[in-house]
Amino acid sequence: MKIAEIREIATNDLTERIQTEVANYKQMLLNHSISPLENPAQIKKLRRTIARMKTELRQRELNK
Image (cartoon, rainbow, N blue to C red; front, side, top):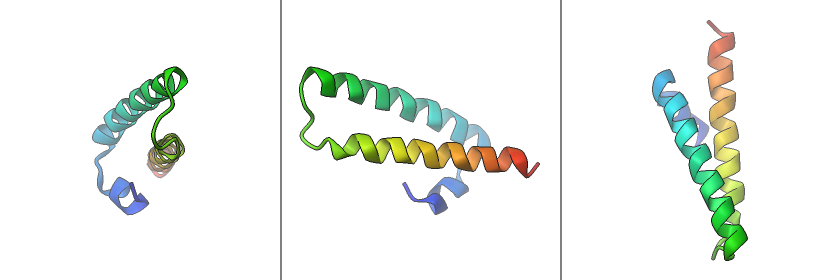
């Protein structure tokens, strides 16, 4: 997900989306530890997306 797409999301929705993505990330790590994923780069991509969302949320908190 691009930063421009993240900025369009409302703050409440962004918070919920972060929680959902973190749950997906944890599930993906668990699945990968049991049997390797076809594309392990998905883990890295998801982790960075979560970081982008958290960064945007923090910037919104600081700008209030």
